[in-house]
Every structure is written in structure tokens, then in C-alpha cells.
Image (cartoon, rainbow, N blue to C red):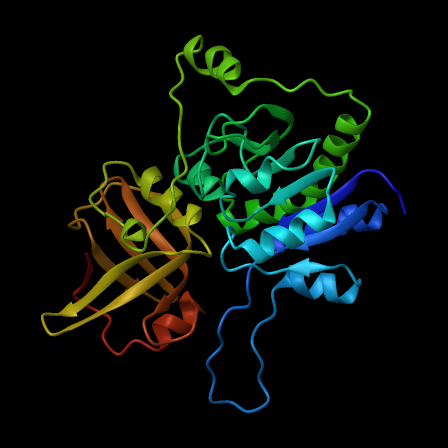
Length: 330
């Protein structure tokens, strides 16, 4: 195992796991891990335990010390972190860190962000790049600073976004290259082969001179996930659905009549560009097909979930519907 640098890894999701695994496989000196506290678990079924944090599980399996602070300013946690005396910290998919955590290592604290910064700073870059119809995105490593996602850029890797790609599929593509960019960044810092670039400088060259707006990726609420069928562009609706699939998931309300309506989550769709005389929002059901009329054609549902039921393909959804006519979405 390499003796230098001493690394503290900070992450809490399956996305983080790919980078952690790459560091450990390449025998870097991970002196400790910071991850999220275990989530409470409620179940009436016997023999079931709480779903384990993937980072904690990996730490236990490989005998790596770890901390699970509820409060990142807790004095006991900060004392234990100081004992590890890290040379560098690497953050992948975690909460916002207070300054007295990220400023501590002499080589700095590196964060991995799932966009090509300075574009799409924020909590949900993967979702927003697809919602906004982008053709490319990527990963960025940067030094954490006082402003969120605004520190000096170290490395970037660009990938294309497929025309039909969902947020889940794009996340899987980014996971596969996340470990390699972390290793390349770390080696570049150790060997002093990387010159950090100010994001202020990048903004001037990539936005102002090309007349491009700076786009952000704020956290997405359930309210934001509701589909507005009256949108002028079928592409806007299509991008929103795939940009929210499989999570947090686009949804609408299915109206069967005045007294019967249910929430309907939509995961996978196709677009049908075609002139028609149906009012916007009418649901047309035929053999194994369910499509919703919009201004430029139809959104054809391939996979969805009616409230109270499991996620199903459209054939099974139609088979389970007792009412198949005079249905609208809103």
C-alpha cells in the first residue's frame, strides 16, 4: 500500500462507491471514510434489517475505519477526523461540508461533480442536463472553496448524452468513468502535473464569449416533477420525463371521471409527432398502447406506475385498467 498521501474519503451513495473502490484497488492509503448515518428502517416482516449504506458496507468488508456523523460540526467527530491527519480529502456525492472540514488537509479537498463545471452547479446535475435537452455532459474534479461547486477546476471528462437516455442510464455511464478521473486527478496533484483553473476564468471563456447562459441544477422537489401537458414543445415534455427517470420520477394525475382520479408516475415514453384533433391531455388507449395527446403529437407511455401498484410495462397497466375511455391527464 502507498504510504503517501493519507486519504480521507467522503461519500454516501452507490455513485461514491465506484471512486472508493478504484482508490482501494490501486492501493492508495485510505486512512478513514466519512459517510452518512444509517437510515431508520420500519418493517413488520421478520428477519429484515435496515438497508445498509453501501460505503459503510465496503468499509466493513475491507477493514477501513469510518465515521457516520449526524452533525458535521460535532466536536467529537471533528476530534476523530483530526486524528486521521489526512494529506488530502476526496468527496464524491455527499452533503455540503463546513469549512473547518474541507480546509484541514494540506493538499486540499477534492470534489467530484457530475457536470462540466461551471455549468450545472447544484444538487441534481444529471437530471437537469437531460431535462434541458443537453447533448453532452461529463465529470469535473475541483478543489472545494467557500462557494458551492465554484472552486478551481482540476480535470474534466466529457461524454455524449444519448437521444433516448434517461437520468438513470446517464448516471450509470458517469459511474463507470468516475473512478478513473479520481485516480488521474490524485496522481496529477501528487506529481504536480495539474494546474488548477479558476471557474471565473472558465465562465468568461465558455459563456460570455459564446453568448451561453450559465445553467444551474437545484434540488428537485416532487412538485417540480409534475408534467405540464400544455407545454408548447413535445420535446420539453419528453426530456422532462427521461430526465426524472427512474428517480425522482415525472408524474401526472389520471382523471377517469369527476370522482375517480389517481396519481400516475411515468418512467419511459416515446414521442409520436403527428397532427391530430384531440384535446391536449386526452388519454387514448388501444391494444397494448397508451398515448397522451399534446400539441405536436402524442407521448406514448412504455412504462409507468399507477398509485398503489407496482411499476409495470404498458401492456400490464392496460390489462389492469377497468376504465379505458374518456380518460384525461392534468
